[in-house]
Image (tube, rainbow, N blue to C red; front, side):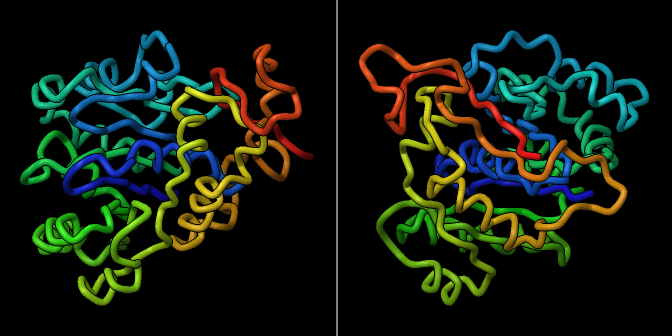
Length: 283
């Protein structure tokens, strides 16, 4: 199984949106868990109006005793449509108070019978807030970086620490933003692997943030990009003998399948305001 962590060095270049998009477009035939490990707190529960009775908060309590990989699933919720998610903490104070428990949780996540996509948020100094333990178990780290000069300089200054933490494992930089330096420019300047630039697809991002309902979300530039990133990381084939999702292709459902449309829009419109992400399965 594979653990992929997503993070940023500075600012908020869309790590949560990227992690959710990648988990949503994870290759069919591979089970996946999305983990909100951002030390500054999780976003998905409030976005989806979910009442959290588990998540990282309860997992921290369980990890103070012996924690097995199988026990992690007792703290997992599902977004509408079935995407498994381990909801994050309320804020950085809660993360700091439980930082010593993170190594046990990171080890349990690495032992799951599932791939794991981790939203690690903005990296704190010395990889505090539990991120260090997560990175220690991750097979690949995807660092989102704005394509502006200041963002690239901040990443350049952080690269020695990131490279040392990776210990030879995969590090992939993903540019964000519509303007600025190209992926080619960043790769030549920083001498690191640079993946496809994350598109400025605000409509799809709003749908993933549960602020908009959209038909054919899987066809949008954002979700197409997410599929390209998983392919870039080599995660494009089912794992032999691994638990699989039903059917051949996991897709985001249409707006109508997610519960209808508001009165001010036609059912034929591509996007409708509403809530929820859902997946359908084609056999």
